[in-house]
Image 1 (tube, rainbow, N blue to C red):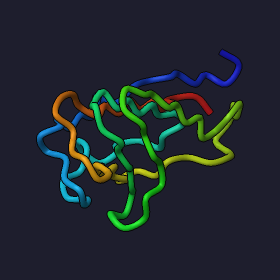
Image 2: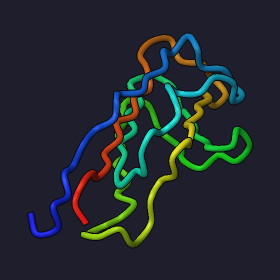
Image 3: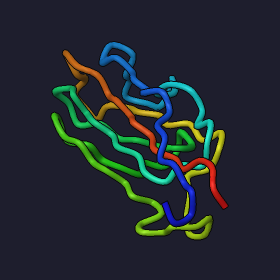
Length: 115
């Protein structure tokens, strides 16, 4: 470990299909506790789903049964580059036809320790 950094995961965030609405209402899990380096979103529902950070702007479209990984800091070893902010919340909504099964899952990776 050249910089003494350790990759750690936050608790998995989930929302059940029955809690999704055609508008943003409930957050998907709790606020981010750490500055995020990478996160994965999995749409295990049978519907198109949109994500937002502010409950207004659709930032990501997730087709049914898909996973997308977002590497925000892409190959950064030190504390420079982009990060997902502490306190950030994810919100989800369905598009047109509501899901009948599944959930949305978000997994978050952050760096701890070192320089």
